[in-house]
Image 1 (cartoon, helix red, strand yellow):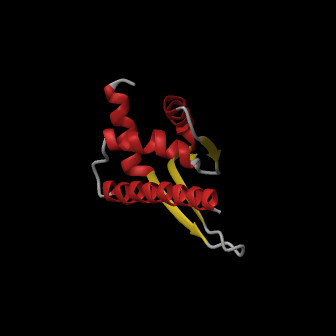
Image 2 (image 1 turned 90 degrees about the vertical axis):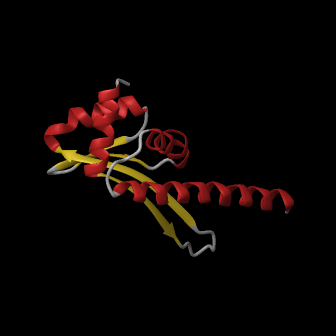
Image 3 (image 1 turned 45 degrees about the vertical axis):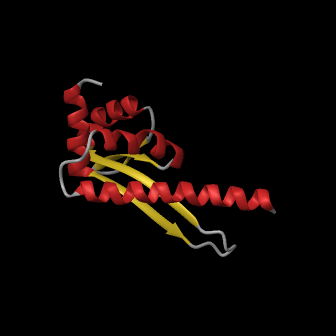
Length: 123
């Protein structure tokens, strides 16, 4: 991707992006951690979200009444594409701290999954 396009993506994410971790307690006892990257733009900027989706090679665009959002829910895609991109091209606002915490959470999820696999193999 051309340098200016990278900076556009970083800038839009600084302004209208979010990184989320959600912990879900299941009745079965096996808890779940959901991850999400979201970038929201006005409905007139659907083209921009489409271009970003094509560049990243991931995500789905959700259309709402006044805005559209590009969302990535896949843990493996976030770990292999989204997190490395924003590590290489850091955010410039306070949102950079959010990304750091998000990245640490993604790493913890990976460690927990490895521990679960090892526990299953031992049993």
